[in-house]
Image 1 (spheres, rainbow, N blue to C red):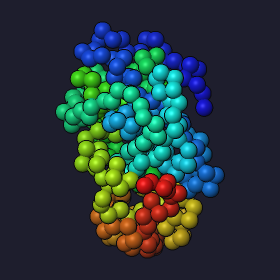
Image 2 (spheres, rainbow, N blue to C red; image 1 turned 90 degrees about the vertical axis):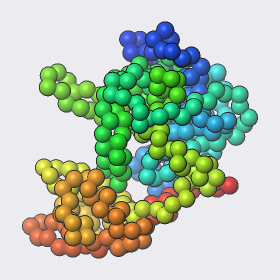
Image 3 (tube, one colour; image 1 turned 120 degrees about the vertical axis):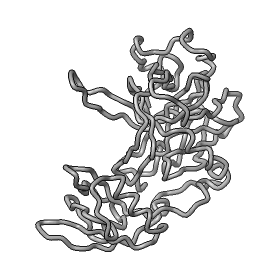
Image 4 (spheres, rainbow, N blue to C red; image 1 turned 180 degrees about the vertical axis):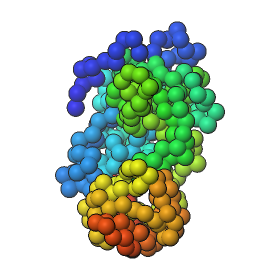
Length: 324
C-alpha cells in the first residue's frame, strides 16, 4: 500500500480553510486510510482483488464508516490515522443494499468523529469537501452536480445517489462533508459524464448518509441490517440500446447454475418486460426474499426461452468475519 506521503491532490482543487464555516482540519482528522487483505479464495477476490485500499471516517468512538467493497471478506484490516498511527481493525458489518461497511478499531483512540448530516436536504450546487485520509492535500473541494437514481451492474440500485465534481482520485470510502461540517455521504465510484464540448467530466458517485441512519444500530449490533436478504442472481449486466445484456456471471452463483450466459439478453422477469438495469433488479427483488425462484425470459442466438433461477443470499457466498 502506498504511504500517505506518496501523492497529493492538485493544489487548485484542494479545499482551503477560509472557504468553509467549520474547522476544516478538525473535520478531516476524522478521515482514516483503510487497508484490507482478503484470503486468496475469497468470493470477491477475482473481481476486487485480495488487497484493497481506500478511506473511511470515524462516526462514533472507534467505529469507522467506509464503502463496503473495501472490506468485504477481509481477514486483516489496518486503519491509518492522520497523526501517523496505524491500528488494527476488524469488519463490524456490511450492508449489501446500501453498500456501507463498518470497521471497529481494536485500540482505544482519541480521534474526532463526524456527525451525520441530512443528505436529503443537500441542494444541487452545494459546496462540499470530498475528504480523503491525509488532510487537505488529499481532499477535494467539490460541488454536488446531480442527485439521481444509480444502478450498478452488480445488482445494486440507489433511488437517489449524490454525484460530485471535480472527482477525487482515490474516491473509495471518502467522506463527503457538507457546509455544516457534517457527513453527507461516502464515496463509492468514479464515473465519466460526456460533455457537449471537450473531454468527458469525471464525477464521484456518493452513497447518501440518510440511508445509514435506519440501519446503523443494527449493523453495529448484528453485523448487518435486521431485514430479509434480497434475492441475488450473481449476474453482471449493462444496458445496450434499450436492452439489458448479461456481461458476466459470478462463478458458483445462482445464474451460473441456471446456465445464464454472457451475451444473453434479459427480456423479462416473471412476465414483466425489462429494458433497463434498475427495472430488472427491482423486479427481481419484488418477487420475495433470497431463495425465491426468479423466471427470466432470455434471448440467445436467435431464440427466446425461459430460465428459472433459484436465487440466493449474496452474503452466504462471502467469507464472513467472526463478527462477535
